Image 1: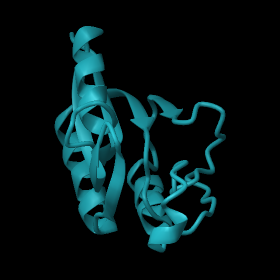
Image 2: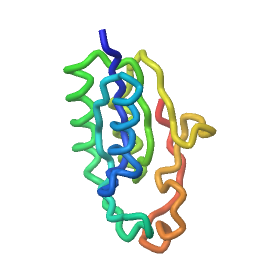
Image 3: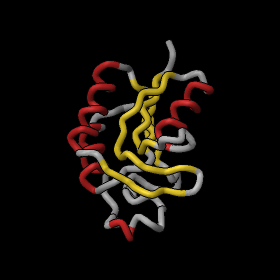
Image 4: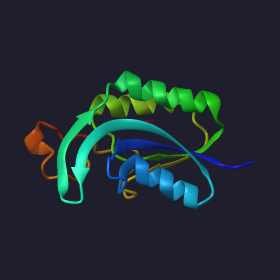
Length: 133
């Protein structure tokens, strides 16, 4: 049986990062990649010009849809986007018994939803930590 990995994170329209890059990597590793998108970005190789976090309920619904349909072995969490999205992720993964990876990998389960973009604070984002479990 092919292993399934659920990747949770932002969407990069260029495919160089985020969900798109994760799916390409998972395919190369020979595992099935499923995704839940937390944020839509406007970016290219020159920088990020916009970030739009999705509604937390929509993120949670994506996660539940994948977990209800696939035997997920591993969850990888990238860009979260906001505190409410972090809470929705935590609630949606309650009871998940597979492996969990956070990006950055040095992060314990509390996460920084703003990732590390210096422009994020100027665009109204805030930095905080949320306990997922």
